[in-house]
Image 1 (cartoon, rainbow, N blue to C red):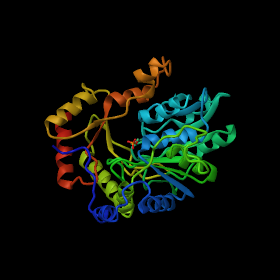
Image 2: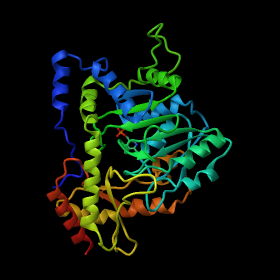
Image 3: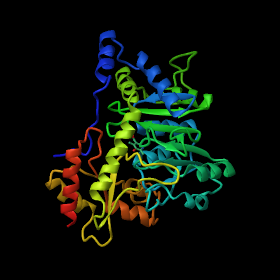
Image 4: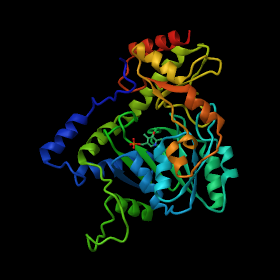
Length: 369
Ligand SMILES: *Cc1c(COP(=O)(O)O)cnc(C)c1O
């Protein structure tokens, strides 16, 4: 079986991990945490970075740090991971969704303004699958209506928008270091901001909101979202090679584009937009409407040929858990609905070899013929 994702851990990962064990620094108090935070902040061009235990809780903390609470509306894409909506809902807020673009699969920025109401508090942008959201119009709307911006850059390590790093936009940005991301710590996440007060709040939320003056007295409920020194050790080693990783992912994407060129019945990812070149977080495929089966069937057939796949995200407005809460019912977002049913991604991990990519492409051709 060709796995859908396998990370590359052959740099300084082992050396730094051993250092943790030999020095006894394994908790969040260890020195790799500060080093990872500083180096990540520098890389993204932000003043402050706060390492946390995963990308989902980074979103939880981001929403609370921006004071989003009961009844506050946050505009976000329907085509994304549940973590985005969950963070808003858990804080008492209301997710308001827009459809996505048929070519980039990113949120339809032109639909945002019509969803703004007096209760709108923020826009949560999510860069999907390797191409960034068109940020200029989003930032202009945020400015015009006085809204906060949360940037979920979990899939955009090393990506830029008009030459500026993804993760450097808006009031607060978040990353994930799950093994299928361009930088992995096994599990892990990061919050980034240029605002010292927001940074302080995130640090406090990460650590149970202990008060510095009197440790076990609390004004607010936080969480334990701390990252371990061992995870940060992996992160430092991975970050050293981010440019290499991005170049490799781009080369892999270009190779798949060549291998699958001209194949009828399938939409390939866009190689670039006017503001960015794809970094191919994953290599997604969408079956054309005239293909007589859906993504589920295609994935099952590819599985039988030894190719691992994953489905696309399922839209937020079609989530039973949100419907049960009375949220996003009776909404229709045709692009997201179509790509959720007809989209899936093929093996895209950094450890994938060219020989494996040739086999994957041959299997995709066989399934479609
Ligand atoms: C991976 C991912 C997350 C969640 O990160 P975890 O570390 O898995 O919790 C959030 N948002 C997006 C867009 C992601 O791709």
